[in-house]
Image (cartoon, rainbow, N blue to C red; front, side, top):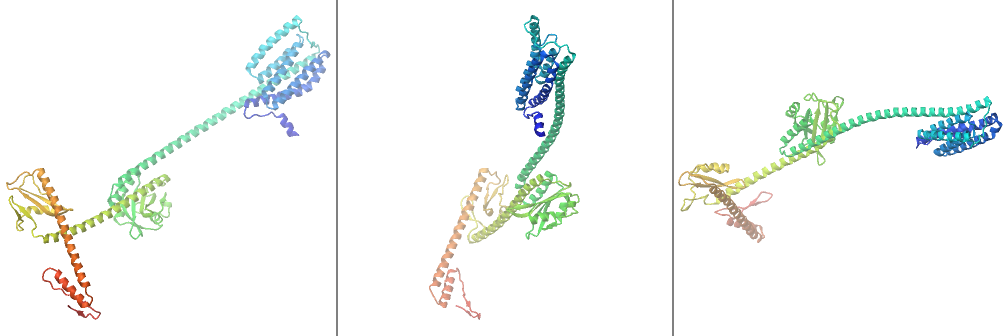
Amino acid sequence: MQNKLRNFITPPIFPEDDEKTRLAGLLNSILFFLIIALSLALPILAGSTEVGNRLPLFIVGFLLIVANIAAYIFMRRGNVTLATYIFLIGLAVAIFGSYAASSPQSVGAPLSLSILIAFTTLLLGGRAIIRLIAFIIAFTSVVILAQSRGWITPVFSITTDPVQNWVSISFVFILTGLALYLASVSLRRALDNSLAARASLQATNQELDQLQKVLEQRVAQRTAELEKRASQLQIISNMARAITSMQDLNTLLTNITKLVSDQFGFYHTGIFLLDEANEYAVLQAANSEGGIGMLNRGHRLPLDSDSIVGYATSRGEPRIALDVGADSAYFSNPDLPETRAELALPLRVVGRVIGALDVQSTETNAFSQDDIFVLYTLADQIAIAIENARLYGQAQKALRDSQATFDKYVKQEWSSFVQQARHNGFVFDGKHVMPLDKQAKRDHVKPVIQTGSLSLERSSSTIAVPIKLRGQTIGVLDVRSKKGSREWSADEIALLEAAAERAALALENARLVESAQRRASRERSIGEISAKIGSVSDIDSILQAAVEELGRKLSGATEVTLEISHNDQQAFQS
């Protein structure tokens, strides 16, 4: 019951419209008070007024109560604007009607107009007041004129009882005071709300200012991080471009340590590679003075968890010590006393660990997650460059071995080919072609044979052009001027070099033909010997046929012996 009464008395709230809520709160108080006050005061007013005024007063009061009840019902249902106009119109009709029906000498009727003004001010605002005052002035003028001319006969007579006048005037003052009180309360509430809103706005502005500063700091920090990341990636790109152009492994490793330390500002950078037995990580390059001393001593670390490098190489995982004093895996190295943070990254190639990149800093907490990511990317590039340099070195060594073997083969073949030739060279004296005299002194061609380079002076009587085949000097084309020293033209030199090149190709072709012929003759001889041996079946005949055919095929007077032996080492001869 109490909850229902409380809900009935409590004004409705409209969260979507603050002005509507304000009007509903005012109307709720005004209408609730007027309904109760009029219901209680109407009998008192009717009993204290003149007999002739009771019926009109009761009718006006009853209609006003009905209008207020209707306005209250509409207000509770949410029609606040309609309820406001019903209340004010009902009040205006009652007041204007009472004024028009009262005697000009009545005091309460004019005073009751202040009630209407007060409530209109409270509920409708300034413009409505201006229109209401203009209407009151016009209405009172008309009423006064009509009463003075006798057009309107007052219904309410003037009472001479001071108590009745006091009651009616007090009722007018009470309603006017109620309106003014509610207006002051509304203004105070609006002022409090305004001050609260202002304070809230100031607090919100301060929060926004603080949030803006925080966001600006975050943006600046993020921008700095992105710029740092972009700079690091650019450094990686430049380093990758630089190291991929290096083909010597030792030069590559040394330059990598210098580049990493210079670009990232590290105290020490070292590169470890695994030995052939995969038991130790051996220091191969370093940039710091302590690292160079370790390098000269052949510094190496076992593949275990007792050191940061050993941990990274044995497990294939990065190992970081942001504070080496608190890290159990840190290996205290007297050569690097200023180290405060260390990071070791495994060098991987096709899933295989080949070593580690070790970087050390003089500051604690020197490596962030972004730094680890960037250095990990750099480690992958370094591992690829190391593997490429290693493969290139192996390929170069294999090429040199192949070239040496080929050069040896060419020398042997040419030595055998030259020995079979009747003459090592020929000379043309301008009229005849003659074999070259082996006893003639030709010291000026020896440097050409040794160096394989053209021998030519600005003004000389001879010019020697090497005859080269696949980088090997196999002969010399020697030209001598019979008129003494002369200037050799570029066309003459080009002609001699072209002739030397063609001669080298022709000699090589002749050697290849001769070698092919020898091989064919050898195969033919082997085939004939095999055929003779295969035509007989007993041991003696086979041995005799083999000895005879070999003796015939070998050039010159040759004695051939063939013997076989048994387990008792008894030999048979034929």
